Length: 407
Image (cartoon, rainbow, N blue to C red; front, side, top):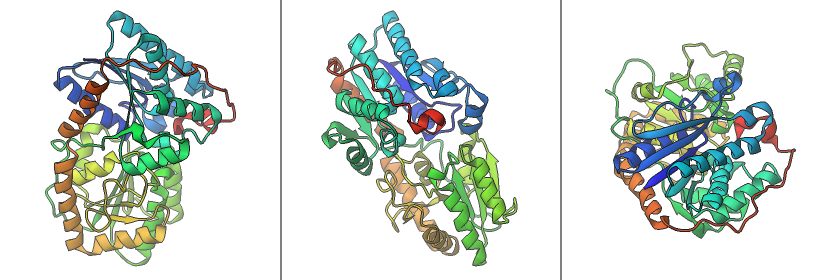
């Protein structure tokens, strides 16, 4: 098949969805598909500092087209960038027709592919990601209508887990039968366990977007409680994001030294497996996920995981079985769970062992890639929906117009 994959974030953007896209593209090329990727990117200094920016790099076997998010960067003008995506898809289709349009994120990329499909007559697959269910659509009428149209009219909808289906349907009124659950996945040949024992305290590792919505500030506050108890630890916070400075400020308020909490900043994807292998416990106090790729990476790297009873996480972790879980935002409970996993080596090793076994068995990219390609086969040749209005109501009050990088 000839597939057009449309992404909102790809490398050098720091996002689990960049990793997800890279692995999916690799599987599609290996299966013999002709793939074009159209990826948006931030080209401004602010966007680069917060998420990583610049055009997407070459991908072996894939035609890569980068589209700078010019409208978003200037005044939150998502519509301008959507028009550019639609025009690009149509131009590439005119050169050589696509069989499938696959968008990563319901908005703005899913809406753009829906509009393009209406014009060129190609079926659409839309992967619904974390923000699509957690906050997009609750921000303004423009984005609510766009998400509802995507959920109602895409030929196929992919989503990470049952808990996320429930959230999306509760927020946006969609039919749960519309969704095909395809879990996250991890490259288990890239992410492997480290050598094991090392000298010094237990090493706690946070990696990903440094964002209060991911619980990074809760993690720092919990570390303050652990230190009061006299429990030794080393903590690393890896990544960039909108709350790097807020996190450093909170660590300074609690008088943490650089040896107690280290902020290591941007991590190139090729270096990330070694970062996991040097740790003992992965900490993800997130408030919500579509499906947590970093948790899967940690499991594949043989780390015990401490996370939350939150949307997206509860589909892959079970408290006391393959991880420890607390309620999102409960800093005292997070500190207690971290204390347990630091002080109880047998527990730490059992959680790591059971998580690794499950990850290798359930979440390999070979299996997940086949699921997605099966969906392609099911809708190939189908007609896209055309019975929806192409214009959205304009709601200038949307909070994401002022801070589009948070969408």
